[in-house]
Image (cartoon, rainbow, N blue to C red; front, top):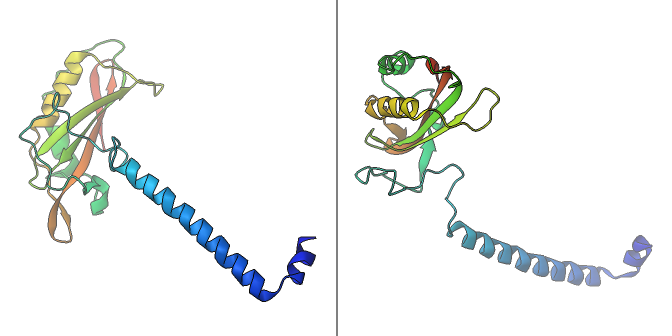
Length: 185
């Protein structure tokens, strides 16, 4: 039925209807973009996973070089961005106390920013148990791993077209009954 109707309409009418539909849909897209830009400048972070400054948790002396351009560590085409790579990371945690604590099993992740000067800040800790359910590890375990992570000073400065840049980094610790089994990545 529609095909018969369209054949009876002249090409001029089809052109005018198409032009009218284009204008109507263009305007609605423009309004959607305006709404999206209002959302972007609201309370939400620029990118999913951004570590926003929290004055209660973060060192006020730590500064990022460009808050709108913080890369992920893997954007540089390398794995771990640390001098001496994985062996030196493992060495950094050799001081972790070996003490059995029943039930303290799972993975604890410490995520942070390495700024364009190679300094670290905005540390955040999350944990999951062996069933990947959210877990709060014993405060002493968190304190020790966080302290050792914060003391690490061999982070390589990220480079973007010969310009030093900030990036996100993380370390995940596999724990079995409070004992440190593995460090990832």
